[in-house]
Length: 333
Image (cartoon, rainbow, N blue to C red; front, side, top):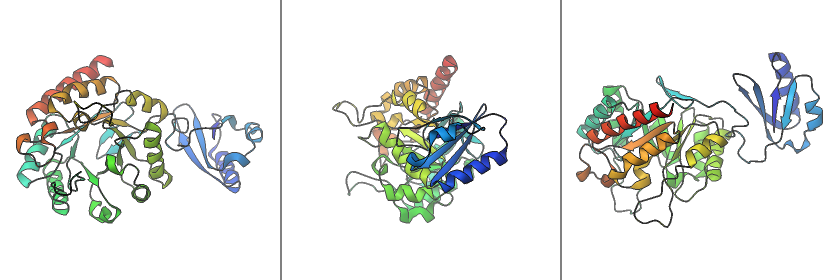
């Protein structure tokens, strides 16, 4: 349920209303927009008398929300959420590139890639330290050493870092990580999501391989219910019957998510196609659809990459893609 507060209402009046609502067994979420203030009611709202609420002097209108995702719902929070990390913004018209290798392999590799993607316009450095692999015999990442190398690249370039977490037991190692990524395979690892809800770090939440948008938003709700509202959603392709590409990029997810939620939406065209030659057209289509950012895998020597070399761009290719994407974004403004 949401209650829209009339303009000119004092903070004391709103505070008194919130206190009364708390006695009715519901918690509240305040969204102060440019033109209105929205009070979101979370919990068992069946006991709330809508007519009584509507007749209050400070209430403009009351509406029940049927969707199970409350905090992530745009009706709760009409204005776009903007995530800011070290001066870099995502959402609300702010676009960013998140780029780097699938896996951190060496100091030389991560430093070279970091410097090149920054020069091409990337705001964030991505790199896998802990790697979820389908086969237990594949390279699993450098883990704690990989995180140390990412921190080194951050000190050298000033770029905030994005890296994936695999387990709640690894959280102490992520204290200096700027954005924690939840991979597609962990999108419904609810115990992990609950723990991340207790942190104060931005979370980049990837859509699962076979999950719909409602399930993605419910996973975001798990994190937000714990108190952490700094969520970035990521469309990274879903599994379909198509075999020519690794996954199928759901471009329609971008405008649909923007309609449903206030959270920023970025797209990962690298995992979506699994083929480096398709990253550029997929990136352009995502930008045209209104994505708030792109997450692209870049390796200084893709042919010798220990993980996902087939979908990784070279630094020169990334520079070309970034320029083309910026051209598209200017064209659709």
